[in-house]
Length: 213
Image 1 (spheres, helix red, strand yellow):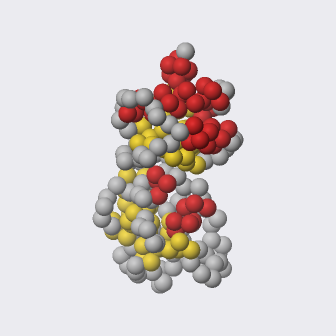
Image 2: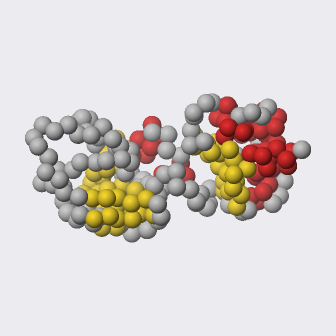
Image 3: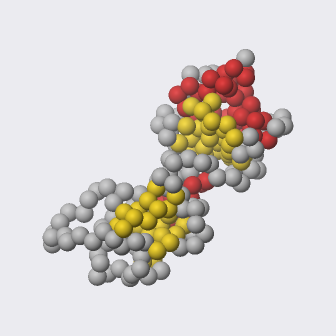
């Protein structure tokens, strides 16, 4: 019966790496069945009995029970449960999750932003850059997927690179800067997605946390 319940909730399975489950179907189950499915998923990944601490299971179930919540719970040293965008990933954190839910830059080097033009950062995600004449006093769009930069203030070429520990950002309207690591926490960006999150850089400073601020 446990195997049947697991299969009913399953979206995708990659032995040794991750399991993706349907949030809505999991929400219909009791806590007892949720615990069984989490253990089955971990065993699918590592092909061995799931030796999980009951407190980790309880934290995972609490996250699953919170409507519209996103987040991550550590299950073991290398295993984590991630809830985001209607899916639950139970994953070995040493491997990337093949998902298009968020932008991830795959290159280890900085990419030069084509201006004008399109710069692809990963399959299904790219940055379109262009010059525009903006009238004085024009309102900046309140849209996180679009960024306006003053051509006279930026240093060309603009580059795109992955986030690094210690990076900081000064959001518009803020007198000081904040650590992007803290910003990721505030924005509920899953930890597994932070290391490869793309940033647009100008003259050694972060100009845009792509798609966020």
